[in-house]
Length: 349
Ligand code: FNR
Ligand code: 8K6
Image 1: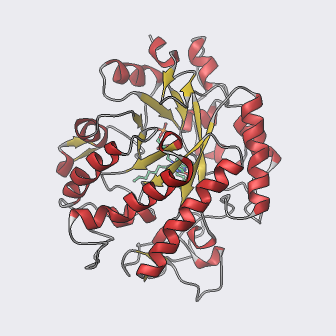
Image 2: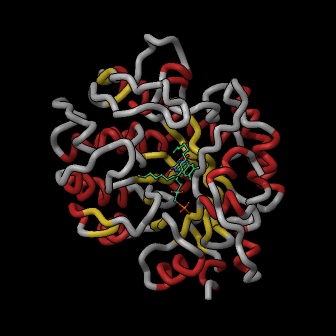
């Protein structure tokens, strides 16, 4: 039985969802060379409009946030116009869509936005190991430890991107604070070795994330602002047992902000983290008392029972939504799903 997934859910007084199934943010690398969303992307999202809420693929807030080819942006007028096509296609199909705002920090590569000498921004000058996926010749660079001026500009660029998202017709934004990208790099000791106001103590480690959240709330309101976090480091970052204290501080601070929701960033929620005492979702549930979105290798059945037993309130579905544009209808009608495979990433169906 998966009926509970199909019941409406009010995020707040502004946003009501028709059901509890979110489409997870899924990078597809299909924007045009100016990082403008295409008509094919508008159709792709509109086909999935039956989701209670679509979270867009991650959208870069400025050029030096780019770490993968053809990821869309929200910093130029043509990009805003391109997203208007997407949001209006989703709205005319009865759906809702948030933009996921992204800066990859040290996972950026200047190949995408400048010459070889262009700077890579991160909390500390520590390179991530390896190279860009599927572009193995692009080895990650040692980033620049951002200055206080850089930080102020980054915060205002996040806020500007949020304003651009609303101008483009999005219903709100999800700040990408997860999966080892810029905001997450500030939240983990492996990637943040700063000794100024942005590193060291729990409060300092959390400062950049909260400043971005607050700047966006000022711009577009808390009802339209959500955040994705990865308290368990698993991608582009190594875990450190001290990270838990940072999130012990951060989660109650976030709770005070009355966000639209908080969303876990993880590929498989059965992963357990020693320093969190188990799953990332259980840890967040125990330390955060507002709307929580679970994710990570769930089926409709396992998600339904997780919601039933109050492990989280809403479920985000990723890969199965790539394989099944009509995922929600199939769940409602009890129809079999097409299995996801990585080859599906090469076309936008
Ligand atoms: C992702 N994921 C992801 N997460 C995110 O926060 N922003 C993004 O842009 C992407 N992009 C992305 C692309 C692809 C191809 C995959 C497979 C995944 C992670 C995604 O949102 C989700 O957390 C995982 O896919 C786990 O959920 P499923 O797929 O098991 O339902
Ligand atoms: C978040 C941006 C990702 C953009 C590139 C697409 C990556 C495709 C990933 C496929 C999923 C495989 C799962 C990898 C899990 C890594 C955790 C250790």
